[in-house]
Amino acid sequence: MKQYITPIVTAALLVGCGVKAPDISLIEAALAGDIDAVKQHIAAGTDLNLKDPNPDGAKDTALGVAAAFGQTDVAIALIEGGADLDARNKDGSTPLHIASFLCYPEIVQALVDKGADKNVRNSTYGTALEGVELPWAVAKGIYEFLDGIIFKPLGAPLDYERIQETRPEIVEILR
Image (tube, rainbow, N blue to C red; front, side, top):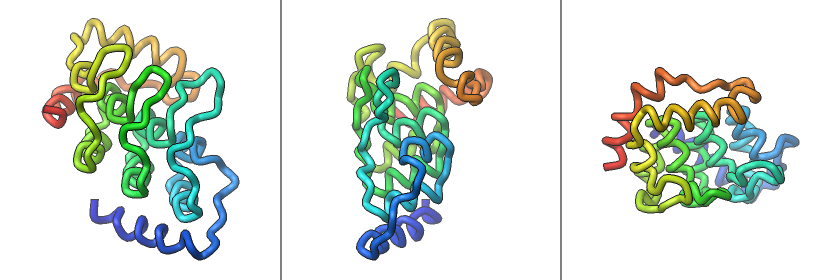
């Protein structure tokens, strides 16, 4: 976590120095894992809580997108930069729901450490803990569905083995 403090402090100091936001949107930078562009957005004072404008999308913030695609450095920069940890997408999921269900322990831990609300319930399966505690047979169907409509089309297929192996670690973080 220490390695992220200096860049974030530097970015915060540059906000008042006329830093210009990059040409890539914050959402696109989060999706691509473009940490330099994300830091530039933070330094430029971009609203970190803007929702994805795609009318067919989930209406996630950049932090939700980073959590969904396992962009750990980006997620931590956004967390440290002051992004809303409990911002909800259109199904009521927060970045904690997303990172937990998709099993990214470093992101889950960073969110919990910064005070993300573990008790928020979404409209699908409840809290982040309840989502990751779903029986594998049930959860796998959800993963396959999401993989088919989101992750594979974007060239980032889900790693079911990693997810299955990491689920117990996520449960421990959330308890």
